[in-house]
Length: 230
Length: 248
Image (cartoon, rainbow over all chains, first blue to last red; front, side):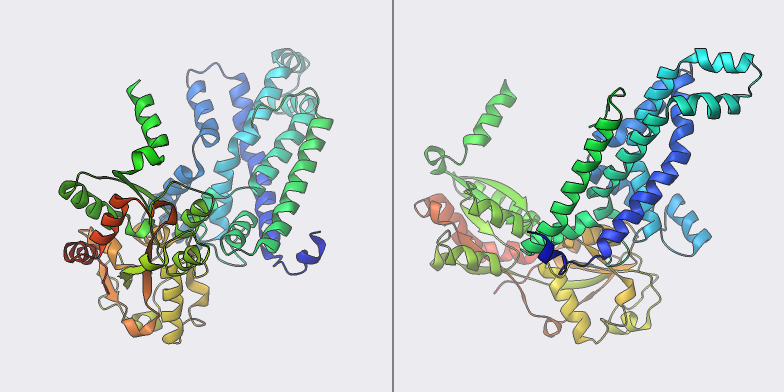
């Protein structure tokens, strides 16, 4: 049983991971929803390019993302330098940096289900709302969002649970600092490498059970919208 | 078609039939460049072929335990080779220190730290000091011992960031994310823009003894044995020293 081993496990990585997943999900709702809305409705020729960019994190190895983020977030680079001058701290080796990295890493898990849902809503209901005098914002908030609410749940839950399992990117940009950037997956990795299998089992089994429960809930609740991401 | 043949060749390269003239060397990542130089030399002076498989010492050890088709194991520490000997997976009489690693405190920008050393560490003036994870990597353990010997570990605790291994630690410093870090002397040998460095004195940490062993499954492999002997020949030692290590 894992219960006795849990008492020996440092809980800090669990809390950091839950905070990271929460921040990532909330911020991705804000950023991912307009992207998905645009993708679902645009006739622009730029669409395949934007769609490809949002899906890149699915196909790229996390070390590729991590490597480029390490370069972009360096204090010498534009992004890292800007952050340093605004906040006085570096983006790498910080919790904020992990949030930025995770948002990139989990972007497709937010955008793809939402874009699919918005496409399923179609133009009809939105145009009907407009002809009844609804502003575009009204039509979006009162028609498109309620019709897509299951997909919002799917997108949120998938983003959250995908971020829980993040490893390669945070390993590159986080610096493995206890209490700040040492997340669950890295704690498990360290335990395995140092042969502390009891602690590794406790954390790994917890993550496995949690992720499984989340996916069962998603599939049970959202039978129609097939999840396209793996 | 060609690729398929190559793939088949590499898949079956470790089989006994082909092993007479082929040596598969599992080598710790930090020693990869030196091992390549040794292998090139060995191939040009004999008719044997060398295949290098690089990885972390811990992962290579785990692969050997599960029957990976390696002949020679060049580890980054002394622990894993000793364990393989204890388990009967490596030949006890073959175990030897083939290289001693040297630790360097390194910064990319020479202007920032004109003289790197204990004083520069104590003075501060930097946000992040990178070292390899002391629990996983021999160079990380040596770095922690050095900080302890200088009585700086607690004072710098908030600024320490950890790479998974010394390779990633080097990347953290080379990319400018950490202003300075403890890296391996061998990593600086091939670089033109040396920045500034301080070669950490030997007495500040336990020696980084990199040990090698001949694996038991290859006891009858003459090519493997002669590669192993070439490591400690005069020429071999010269190659290893040129790559930034010391030799016993």
